[in-house]
Image 1: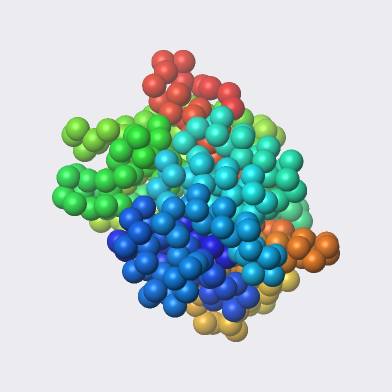
Image 2: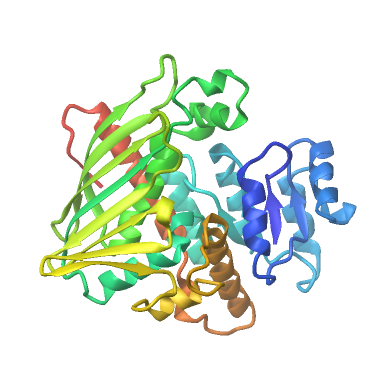
Length: 377
């Protein structure tokens, strides 16, 4: 793979590299890690890349990699830049025949997302959107339980994602991550809804297999003079008639990364929490509550495919991230070799999820500003 972004001071780029490297099937061969060549060189040399594969710009990287023989050029590019630098690099990569892994939200607008979707489909390429939490084995078990009918028809969903790191104006204190996330020119129309709300909405659709069709939102900016939302909630309607509640905040003082989701069907309910990611709680009216554990009794083969160590040994965020990279890489490799990818390899969030994420964002922000409130997706 090649990488765009992820230079000195970046947070998520290093996480991407660790995840990509975990299974030993992906080699980082080139990169344009910063808009400043000296920083790109600093990162590339630290990663033992040859100088001629460290590029000053992403345009140069894509152009020169495309000129290399197929066995030498990068097969795909990982784009780990702030939101406003997602679309153009992804578009150029797809236009030149490279598969793409991209951070969420996919673009700054729904229109841009639709352009990437068309390029993916027209060029028969793969795009993976890194909704990391879908990589956890017990999230995949939850999806399997819904698909197999164990919950019956889903009637109610709740998802919450409170953080506390932006309870104070960190964007004014030299915090690089806070600066771009609070800047509409770099983050887009949404702050907390874009940063963590897209994860929450994606989890609902990923696990349930349903689509959010309507939103009724309350969008807030709590910290004075902040340019984007840092808190919000939405009532949801799903395409089977089920209802839901979504709550996110980055001003929930003291909270770390407290993602939690619950789904209730007419046969059973399930609950998953990020701070106990290896457990899935199953509830039924006439039976004791049951706790399934990653790789333990009662879990499906989809869990086994997405775990690396025996039951009782906790796996976490990097491993979940790595599941996206591994499934994506196996799919790309199969496609390169003219083979049909296995079904479990295709289990990664894709360009369709990216379009859904941008549609959700545009509608939830519009609802937050509107007196009408209920808005259809």
